[in-house]
Amino acid sequence: MTILPWAQLPKNIEEYLLRWAATQATAVWLQPNGYEYYPQRPFKKLLAVGAKRWIKAKQQEDFKRLYDFHQQQQSWLFGYLGYDLKNQLEALSSQHPDAIGLPEMYFFEPQWLFMWEEAQLQIKGDLPKGFWEEVMHTKEKEPTVTSSIQIQQRFDRQTYLQTIEAIKQHILEGDIYEMNFCMEFFAEKAVIDPLATFQQLNAHSPMPFSTFLKLQHQYLLGASPERFLKKQGKQLISQPIKGTAKRSKQPTEDQQIRQQLYQSEKERAENLMIVDLVRNDLARSAAIGSVKVAELFGVYSFPQVHQMISTVQATLRDGATWAEALKNAFPMGSMTGAPKIKAMQLIEQYERTKRGLYSGAVGYITPTGDFDFNVVIRSILYNAQAQYLSFQVGSAITYDALPTQEYEECLLKASAIIKTLEAHTNPIT
Image 1 (cartoon, helix red, strand yellow):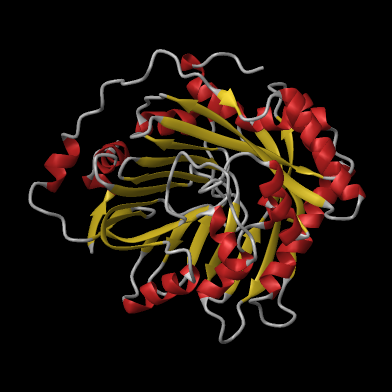
Image 2 (cartoon, helix red, strand yellow; image 1 turned 120 degrees about the vertical axis):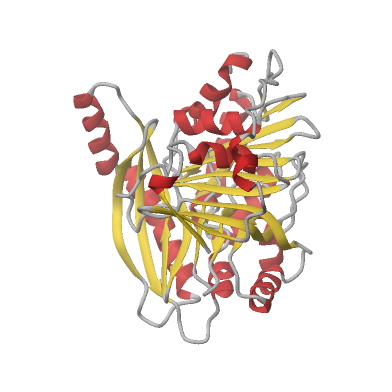
């Protein structure tokens, strides 16, 4: 372990390290953006680079395989769980196209791990001779962006509205009482600088669970406000988000909007449905009587939106592994609906794109089996080889949902990404 006091490092060392990491084959950057007030704290600031060993999905018992992989050598692991791991957990399938092509699960033990602490940078892994010279001399890429990125939608406005009405009919018939419905925005023949795009997105929309992930030519550029699941010792923490309102530049009006969100019966009902689902998911791994709601209907403000966030906690029962806790809660209820299995069946029926890493989870596992994972939302997925760029947005559909409002909410959630790319896009209608 190398420990370097901040006084010995350039002020912009973070920028240099991230630029260098983006030249390597495998890298994960977790960026908390200073949200220390976030309940149960945001991501740790961590940069994992290079793969000493790795594991990826085989589409059978992948949660157990991940646990066994960690047990073989109890080290730090970084990576992700794709949404379609659900097909291993229930009698489900995914037939939609997937132009990004990431494996459904991937984790690696980093060759180098950089950990930002209060007064120092801790580095795990042997640094080769000339390492800092290489880092400090990694040049910023010249802009390589197409003159116009043509963003398209899988659903036009009218088709989206009709689909919401069809989903509401399922609610009326008692099939479900809430469903998270998502649509894809995409661009073909798109050439971007992934790191520069991530930095622009992070500037527009800094979030407590922001992520830059690179696997060869495939990227996740993430600005997530939501935690999926955290394990700290025996404690499990999940923080579903349901409830969104647009910010105002006028302080008085902004505060009124915030208060309206907190008092909204519709938003509270949506949030409570998912809180109940999460409580049930955690109970599958928890000690009897330990599941509790630490905060209900908390409203937190981010640059683009106010969000309603609840915090559910539990104690991992004796004999249950950390991997079982992940498996029993996956995929996160805020991105599925309730009842969960039927909602996922209808998601497959009505959506048009395989979710892949979107609405999955990115994070880390420590040598002792603690972990922290976000929910992959408000994020760009990019396949540089195929020149395909994709981002998805969605909302919770209940019987009270107004299709036009749900459509506007989707555009609001996409606004930071659209702003990041707007210099190279046509207007979206």
